Amino acid sequence: MREQEAGGEAGRRGGVIRALLGVARLAEDEAAVAVGGASKKKAEAPDAERNKAVVRVVAADMPPALQRRAFRCARDELAAMPHYPRRLEPKRIALALKKEFDTAYGSAWHCIVGTGFGSYVTHARGGFLYFSVDKVYILLFRTAVEPLPQ
Image 1 (cartoon, rainbow, N blue to C red):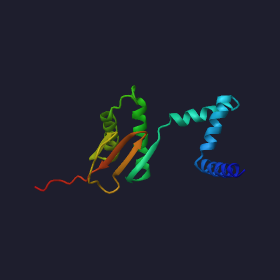
Image 2: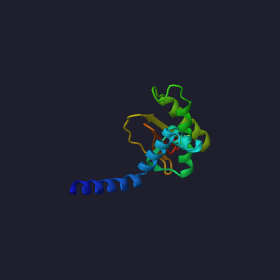
Image 3: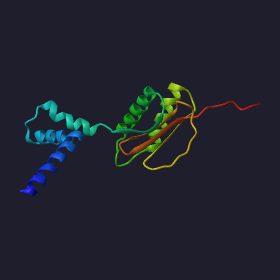
Image 4: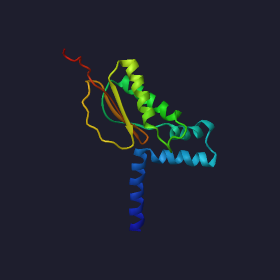
């Protein structure tokens, strides 16, 4: 009898944790889709969430509007790659982000893209963003350009 009570209590705690994390709801939605009891709109929601790229900000010193532009540009470039995720083309993403930000916000933008790299950079105030899109990490920063003394 005590084993059942302990198991029931652990089940309740696990249910609370799953509810807080939203795991139970996702599992119920997937089960409903598998059974076919869900509406068409509900059936499309999990697929749309799976196909959407997950963006995570690691560190930022950049206005939100510029961040959103960087996220959009990176997602668009990744979506346009014919062989992604099997074959990543980091130079293509870096070039696209650099061109986008150079044309929109002036020159001196730099971009590093990859799945593993180290960096230590000095950036202009309000011009630093380190984020990931799925498993691809992107470092975008701007340096202050000062004219040479003559």
